[in-house]
Image 1 (tube, rainbow, N blue to C red):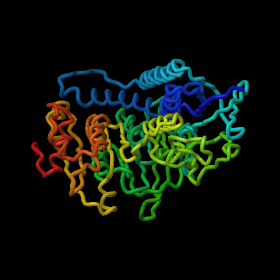
Image 2: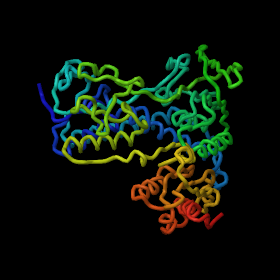
Image 3: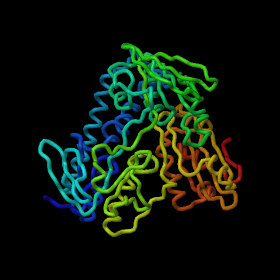
Image 4: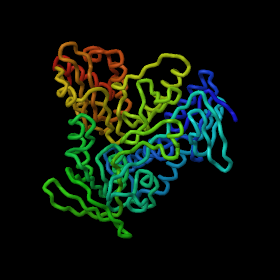
Length: 465
């Protein structure tokens, strides 16, 4: 029976990055993955393929609606969904192959099969031929799977999850989306751009409820202009596949029943931790009421040599959060003293315009009683945005009323996913709004909006509004 310093179960962003860092630190490392390709949900049926389709559909949308203004005339424009899916699959294939290359390069032993605990130090990998291995340390990185509630169980045909939405064979004439969160809005955007009528059914009073309220309010306006329809404060009672269509029944806040029909229904009500098949009880572990593995501040389970990271533990279900935790655990095992500032893990929505945020929301600051000041700058006042015809959104900076330290940054803007890193860097070094306001930003750029928002937060003196 082969023995390792570290065995990682799960090859998603948390797992494979943990394995890489362990190998870099000189630890004999093994990685277990039950699927045929490495990369987990993110690379195979999540982050990477959804971004590929978002980019393809955005190109189509611009060709259809914006190219004329740029002096580009196109006749006979049509969306070839099969080619979009094929390109997406190629992107996924290349990315997953890249992970395999990194495993080989770093001499990490990869086992294909389902890993399950025999005892706290022994894991059996079930495949065509079962194998048992032992480890001094074990990292559980098995991720998450799509969530659903009673009455909305996916049949993966017309009542679908994000996985099936990435491999559609036709563009729906009408698509219902249950859930106004990141996954629903991103995939809803893909098909709305391609011509589908998209209706979002949301239990709460707004979309993106975990973000600053101003984000959800503004983005709702943007999406409505693009043809989205919203049903807020609606509780889904059930969804039925009628063969060539679906029928959704919901109850609004007045207690009235509402029926909605469409070609497909996308169930996007979040994700839940995935531990099926691990046989945690054999390692002396158990999950909490939410199905998560409990860990301490060092990401150790009740067995100190067994760690858990990413979607399978508490916190935001984000690939980059999982990566940070993977590195954190690897360095800890190697005797280092790493740290993660969970307040500075950015959240991103890859619609267009993109949405990004880091730090505290206004609602959180108000609830805590902390005195703050806010500065906002509209994207439409930005020269670079007018040049590219991307004028929707804003950037808002929240700073401490007394010290001017930046407490939160929230934005709907072109390339917000990249722009947010200026805020993350500034906040990591506890910069003030005035620090950003006094930094020279290139012109014309989208990043100038961050400087202007900082000026507005510093002394209400934004220059271009």
